[in-house]
Length: 48
Image (cartoon, rainbow, N blue to C red; front, side, top):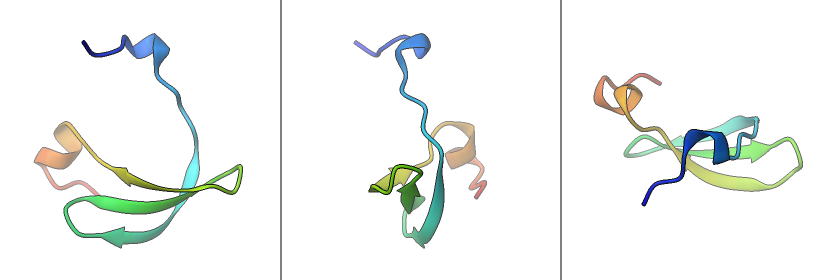
């Protein structure tokens, strides 16, 4: 079952690299690097 939106974790970061399939390598403000993806209407309409 999906979590409610108020339980979501929100972090800010900088995109280091755009990869295929709407995936991005992102550096977070705390120094960690993560692989992130877009979803929903942004993915449907290829908004980048």
